[in-house]
Structure formats: structure tokens, C-alpha cells
Length: 531
Image 1 (cartoon, one colour):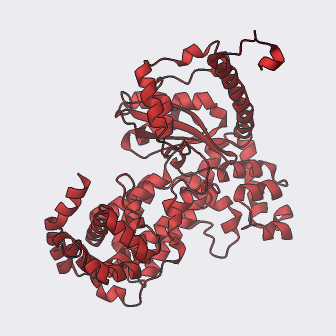
Image 2: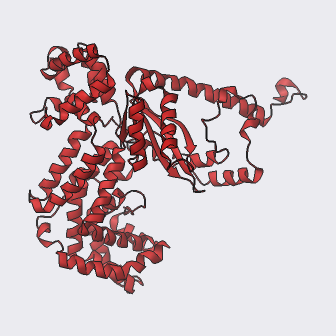
């Protein structure tokens, strides 16, 4: 610089550079965002909302927009004072619809808490061309919670599985011993927020059963201080108890098919709306098959699933998307009526999303063309691609002969089923928010005249933020990926196998009661490590 401009040159300050580069970054982001907005206008989008609690115990609500192009973060609000007030929650959701543009929004997805459910109905009354939909991932997670609450074998088996993992992971020497026998594999430990994690732990225990049996039978374990301790022997007894493993199998016969559905709705690979209706039904059938069609073995499980599916999760959008999905529509077992449920959902959606009767009349005639595979739908390429392309892409390729139906189908089949994109680890984002918590939409950067507007905290707070930021890798706010919960990819959920005689050897009711009493005495092991 000095050689080029001379000794009198004064370089720009840190603040001068930061302001310029920030504005350039904002401009580039705005250009990229326009491509997303064009897609929202063309085929519609989903507003996703979910909350999380930060380190200062504030309840933060994130708002994102999803379309086939990807997920875009809009803004977040500190909702500590409004999250339980219906009229304020309604205004919060209504404002984000207005921000995105009502004409662009097909559905708003939130969790299915009572306040959001009530507000969702109010939102649909005001905004007559969109749907409120409960988060499918949250609903399935609640099914797992109900299993644990209402099925004793699930409750006690999860408790024993937690006892194993908590004991091992509370002792670094045992972690090393575990990895020696599992060839580096870790056990998934139950979390406190998602009930599915407990079943993923059972699946991991099931997969590593042989390694665990070998470990707890080895001389290294028996001669260690842990193998001779009272707590260690109790954990050893659980691992070496054949009833425990048979109970694990019983739980997984129920949970594994639903974890496959959870993986579907929790994934960013393809829009799940066209698949959830069939996949939920397939999960129930798989559960029945896992219990050899013995009704008493799966009846209570089905009741728990149906209670959530019928009362919370199932929506007309799911049925309509099933009908319009070429992946299923031409299959011999396609349920064209489903007791009237499928077509009822289809026509409910048509009336809501397409208020013009003349356009609906055209679509009704075009549905016949689609159903009978006439025109472009009957071409060999269209038939070959029914299961190769995402449903929305298939309609984009082969729906030109039925333009109104094509537009309607792409609009529905491009939707997500969950707000799981809101459930990332937002710790890095929290560090940014801690500089300036606002209850309004973020400051418009293109109007910034000086970067002084950014500096709103005392110096000590900024130092603390920078120290914490150093502990984070900054890579946990990505909005796209194979799945939002990597644990769902750890286990081969589609190929879990069960022994031939496990049904005959699982715990009886009397044995479960005995185990429950014994576990009450052993809970100090877990409490002592978790406190």
C-alpha cells in the first residue's frame, strides 16, 4: 500500500471496511433471496414456526419459509410475554403471513400445542386461502411420548436402556472400553426434548447387542472397579438379562416403522406432503406384521397412533397430496376413495385454494385425464418416471396438457409436513441475537448509514459474546441437509431384524411389575449422574 500510494496514505478504518463489506453481503443475499421469492409467487410456500428457549430463559420464536428451492430464515421474535396469549400469538402469525404475502402462502406449520391449534383455526378463518397444519414431526414425537406413558413395557425398557447409557457415559474409562468392543461405535443417549431419541437409543442397543454382551462378560469388565461395584453389577444384570433384549425388540417392533416416517418428514431431501398419508398407513401395517397379525399385541399401539393421527395430524392436504402423487396413484392398492376420506380431502383443498368455480370445473375434468393416464400422462417416459422423480417435478414435466391441475398439484406436492427446519441448534444464532434482541423485524441493512447502529451492548457483553463464539464452530445454523436430525440416519431403520422366539420370551405383566419396583430402588444411579 505504501509503495503504491506513498507514505501519506491513510488506510480505511476497521469500521469503514466492515460497513462496506456488510452492505455488499446484504446486497448479494437480497439478490439470492429474489430467486426464492419468485418461486413463492409461482408455486406457493410454507411458513414454518417453532420456538426455543435461550440461555437467558427467553422464549424465542423462529420464522422460516420453505419451498422446493430450500428454506429461508425470515426473522425471530422474543415471545416470552406473548407465547401464551391467544390474541397476541394470532397477531404474530398473521403478521408473518402479511410479511411473506398472503397470496404466496399455502400453509403455516407450527407445533400442535393447544394455543397454536386455536390460533391456527382463527388464522384460517381470516386467511381463507391457506391452511394451518400441525408439525408432523412433533405429532409423531408425541406418539412416542404416549407409548412411553401408556405401555409399561416401553416405559421400563426405556428406563433400563437409559440406565445403561447413563452409567457408561458417566465414566470415561467405560467409554473407552465400550468403543473397544463396538469398534468405535457410540451409543445414542436419550435427550430431554425428543421422545424419539429414547427409541433410537434402544435401536442402537439392539444393533450393538452382541458387542455389549461380550463387553459385560469380558475379564476386563469383571476385574475392573466398575464390574465389582454394586451399581456396575446392576447394569451388568440388565445387559445380560434376555428379557431386557426381548423387551427391546418388542418396543422396536412398534417404534421402528414410525421412525421411518419421522425420518421422512424430518428430511430436506424431498417434500413429504405427498407421502405422509401412505407412509403412516404403511407404518401401522408394518407394526401389525411385526406382531404376526396378533391383534392383542398391536391393538393398544394402533389406538395411540390413531388418537394423534385422527385428532391432530391428519389434514385434507395430506389426503389431496396422496391422491395427486403419481408414485401411488397408479398402484393396484391405491385407495381412490379411502372410505371417502381421500377424495373428500382433495375437494376440500380445491375449494379452499381455488375459489373460482370455473377453474375448479376445469380441474375436475383434468383429474379424469390424470386418473386414466391419458395424453402426456400415458407416455412411456411419464410412466417410467412416476417413482423416479419427486411428485412436483413429475407434474412439471408431464402436466402441460392439464395446466390448471398441474399448477394445483405442484402447489400441494411441493409442501413440507413439519417445522423441523426451525429446530436446529441455534446456539451460534443466539450469540448474534444477544447483541441486539428486538421485538420487531430485523433492521433493514440497505438503509444503514453507519455501522454504529449495530453497537447496542456494553463492552463487557461484547467480550463475553466473542468468548462464547469461539467455543462454537459456527456450522450449526445450516438450513439444508439430508435430515435435520442426524441421529435418524445412524440406525438402519428399514432393516432392523428380530429373533424368531422373542415374542414368547418377553416379560410378563408380573415380571414388569417386579422390574418397576426394582427400578425405583435403582433410580439413584441415574439421578446421581444427571444432577
